[in-house]
Length: 366
Image (spheres, rainbow, N blue to C red):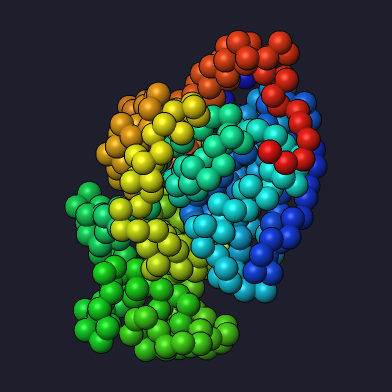
């Protein structure tokens, strides 16, 4: 046992898998914990962030069968082109393919930040496969949320860091004058990171993406500036972001690809779909944990999701920002997991003579 908020001891994966999906991608999937534990999949943020270093240590290995995976194009997942068929909808479809490949009937779904958006979409698409959702640092995929983070809203709290962010993508006004984009800073960074030898006009010309060459240092610098802007706001006591090399550049490319396309969702994001599916979602328990001082994904999104999802529980975590692995948020996350497990145990005893264990081991398919 470990005290609430502490990380469990690090262990090697119990099993590792390579799962081919569409677009020439292969996903890296790792399992931790008990083979007969309650299945739970953790959906990381970013997009393009990869499995967080401490994710495997958040869950009690005696209780859970933990499934972690690197989303398309990042971490140890492989591909010829990380942006090929890399959309919000393909990432959601991948979660279901992982479930089928691992012969899991139903599982808990936990998502952080962009992973919370993917988790909500997955639950909407496959409600019968979801035992319950735990969502942290909620992001709903709305244009207004992207405007807040990248077009001047969050800058009111971090004006000195915003100045660095603006410098990192060059002259936005000059680029925007050629062909305006509703998210000019995102478009300028997209051009600087993915098309470093092209002019700063967005969107860039078809097929203009270059190989790493003379402009590689410019692309890396822009990627680091982009990633640093969000990373330095994630905690109440920010730490400098390391240069990171290829990992930072990869994450920036994937994130900018998704954000430039509005997360491949309507401007209103996923919330209207949640509202329309109230009856269906009511059967899936949901616990939302949200930092009071989250500037990356302000608490209003979590509150609106809570209002739209019948029976959901919302816990605003005082003294917490956006990051999951600060101790106060880890404590809240582990409390939410314990609460979810208790709710599922009570429900399963009413519906199955075998309790929760009767639900957690199953055959291939739904």
